[in-house]
Structure formats: structure tokens, C-alpha cells
Amino acid sequence: MRLLLPLIAMTGLAACDSVKGEALEMCEASLTRELRSPGSYQRVSKVVTADVERAFVSLTYDAANAFGTPVRGIKVCEYRVENGIIDTSVDLFQERVNAELWTAQKAADVATARVLGNSVP
Image (cartoon, rainbow, N blue to C red; front, side, top):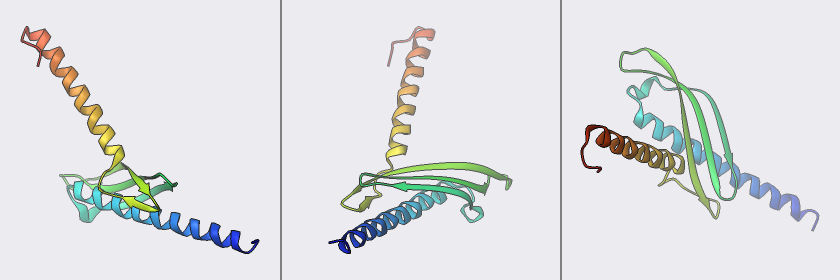
């Protein structure tokens, strides 16, 4: 039994490393699709964590903007993990950001309508 416990722990760590690697790949792929000049992407640093439910990636990177000037940026991704398999179909962090932006835009629309004396959308 003593020999079995380290083996189980090592297997769990290997699965966690696999999830971390896949989360990093997916986050970088998502980032390069968003960049104006994907070929200029250079990772500066990364933080990748994973547990049995979530994988979290934070990338700091340099990439050229529309004028060709290198700028530093940060990309954050969060994915759901189920049974040691990462669900990369949904970036949970981006979903929360989009929901907050939608709420802020809706509040701005209501405020603008009130100022202009229009009906509230």
C-alpha cells in the first residue's frame, strides 16, 4: 500500500500537468487570434494553475500593435475541468468580462436615454 500511494499521487500530478499544458496552449491560441500581428507575439511570463474543477492561465506578452510598435499586454483565461479533461469551448473569465461589459453598456444606454429625455431601452 505504501508503494501505491506515491504512484497514485504521481499520476494525479501528471494529469494536472497535462491540463495545465493544454490550458496554456488554448489560451495562447486564443490570444494569437486576437492580435493584430500574431507573428510578433512573444511570451514574457506565464502563470498556470489547475485543480480538479478549474484551469487558470495568465500570460504577459509583447506583440506589435497596428503601427508595428511593440506593446506589452496581459491575457487571462479560465477553463472548466471535468474528470481531468479541460473544456476549452468556453473561457469562463471572458464570459464574466463580457457579461460585465454588457451590463455596463446597458446602464450607459439607460443613463443616456434619461439625459436625452428618450424612452429607456
